[in-house]
Image 1 (tube, rainbow, N blue to C red):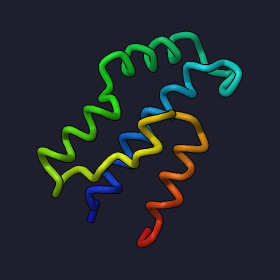
Image 2: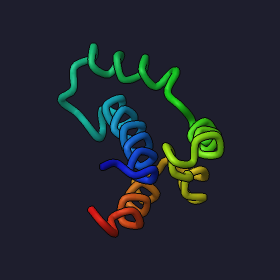
Image 3: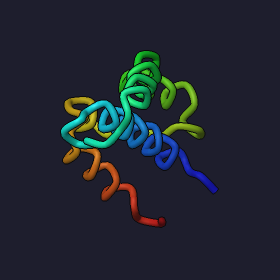
Image 4: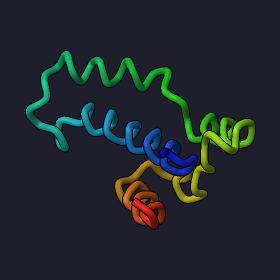
Length: 89
């Protein structure tokens, strides 16, 4: 069963994955069409603020966005989110 923090973690990790697909330094062998698709998907992807609003409206469905993730989408923040969320995985 998926719990709210796992759903939020999946949204944040998916955002980071799409960002990585767009960066040729991180993913050098990705085709231009795939990079374009990632960019197109991110254009309307929920922001941290959107995810936080979803949590406030539906706390049983979406978990809160960790405060540090709102400050940066860096790999360190994402790894911290993952590490802090692995109690029962």
